Length: 114
Length: 114
Image (tube, chains in turn orange, red):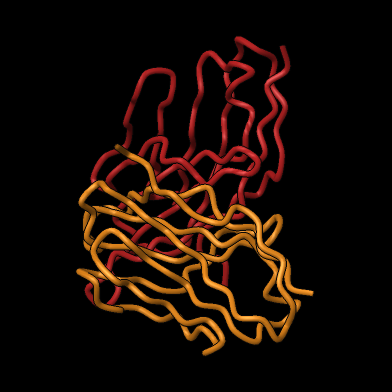
């Protein structure tokens, strides 16, 4: 199984809503990531979890709250988002966070904030 | 500061011909270089990588060349097939605070014409 599964595929939310994005992998990878990608832009790193601990937070606003319940699952909790947060949110995993940078990505959640 | 640059936003190639995608970088600390392919509505998929100590890596129809003195790498696809039509991201990674940080280029959209 070389798949990273993300749900939901699409999400529309208002600025006062609370929602969560979910990500799952069963490759035994010990590093998991959240990336944000705007149209015609490269993916931008948001968070890195290594061995279920938050290791990197790229100065992401607190309205984004990551959670790693176990080694296979990664969540991103969303609250009070702004329209400029509309983007494709990608989850990725790798064997560990000190490898070559080879990442396995999910299909992403296309988020629209109204 | 865009450390990884893909100066061609798009490229069209006839089926069966060679596709050459180019990438330039500025950070001499990068120790791995990777190419990812992305279809619409899907996450990026790892294609091929090269260590900074090598100048060529080949995998089937895909070959990556690295010119460290010029800080330039290229991806060659021979022969090109219609299924290769996608956005190709160049990426580079370097150790940063104990973590292998991946930096992506802006992507090149390849169209292979049957």
